[in-house]
Amino acid sequence: MRFVAVVFLVLLLPAVAMAGPIDDRKPGASSSDFQRWQILAMQGNDSAQFNLGLMYYKGDGVNQNYVEAAKWYEMAARKGNAEAQTYMGNMNELGQGIKQDYAEALKWYLKAANQGDLAAHCGLGNVYTDGPEGIKNYEEAVRWYRKAADQKWPCAENSLAFMYLNGWGVKPDIAEGVKLYRKAADQGLPMAQKNLGFLYEDGVGVVKSSEEAYFWYSLAANSDYKNAAYSRDKIGSHLTPEQISAVKKRIAEWMPTPAPAEASGKPETR
Image (cartoon, rainbow, N blue to C red):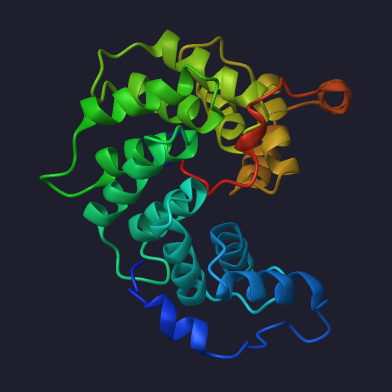
């Protein structure tokens, strides 16, 4: 997200079904998963269409191709696959593989959210936060973030924390923001860990502590989160070797609290 943090090719299925399999595998990649999902996807299986889209999206065993990912996601999404609908919302929101379209993102996120997909709740919050005039609505963003945060969804906790800290769509409450960042950070969300490090570095809503900042920046850096290693090293230059050693011991012993099982593998929201 910003501070502290925060497609649509309409393809006709019959036309795809008539085409023969395409070999987009990376050189040396195993053929089993790609070919299995491709065959089932061309037969109209929505789970296979979603999984094939995911392979293209991540470049997992195939050459990364957002346009192909969007094509297969949309096929699955139109069959009611909630995960595919969430990814379609995400690709429309970000303009990956298709032209950026916030209204289309809202449409797909809402379909998935109505099926209980918590990542889609976060997606709705993001669109209502970042969308253009006519779509931007901070109160609606808070409502959707809260729905998912109440079910312990880390990304929603992180985004709702931002809203509280900035007073967007809700009365400013730094203490509540800190609490939500800590919940998400404790669940292992690197974005929230970096945000919590920032709060400790600057003493926002917490007692200023370079050691605590180093601890949270380090956890985020261990997940290769954006610029967290730089923030860790910068704050670490103000610590003694003994202090760093003590923090590293805490890091080695740290374990995340459980998050919803479906939280892994979803598109990052904030």
